[in-house]
Amino acid sequence: MSTITNGSAATPTTSTEPILRVRDLHVRFPTPRGTVHAVRGVDLELRRGEVLGIVGESGSGKSVTSLAVLGLLPDTTKVTGSVQLDGDELLGRSDKQMSRLRGDKVAMVFQDPLSAFTPVYTIGDQIAETVRLHRGASKAEARARAIELLGLVGIPEPARRVDAFPHEFSGGMRQRAMIAMAMANDPDVILADEPTTALDVTIQAQIIEVLRTAQRETGAALVFVSHDLGVIAGIADRIAVMYAG
Image (cartoon, helix red, strand yellow):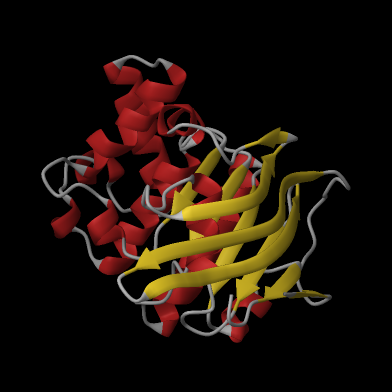
């Protein structure tokens, strides 16, 4: 993996000490035809307030790297190396331990929000749930926070749309709601896994602006994963290029 500094991007205030450090990350998937070595020795550093773009062709291991950081890969996956969040090792932690971090210290914006949201619960309930779990907020407080977040990411009439189900939102609105959920607890790191891939060019630009808003409001460092170098160039401070894992 090679890393490039993007001089054209607006660089926020960053600290020199990494909030997220990945060292010699390897991910292997067992299959009937043998082991697939999907990620091969990836090294990454992400500083506070920084936007790191990870770019590469389909199948290069970008999304697998992000999922490995959050411990969201299948139990049969073999993950080795080191993933440190603010100096604390994450690899080897149980799912229960990682659940305390997901949505709190580290949040993720998934590529397909329709499948990431639970279809039988409203958008507002799903955003409010993460606030209640991690902040101990009351039901009323969590709902108010959900409405505030939906308004912040540009959802019209948030007090009404908070009770809508995922299928009642357009693709761009679902992605905005997913970003709102990621912002809910002011995380240290937001991982955005190809959040603009399924959207048209105009909506892509809007989602990138929403991600900038999310970063500004939460102070989080952002990892932006994409196969589109043009999209990455417009948002990232540094760019990591992946090829064949």
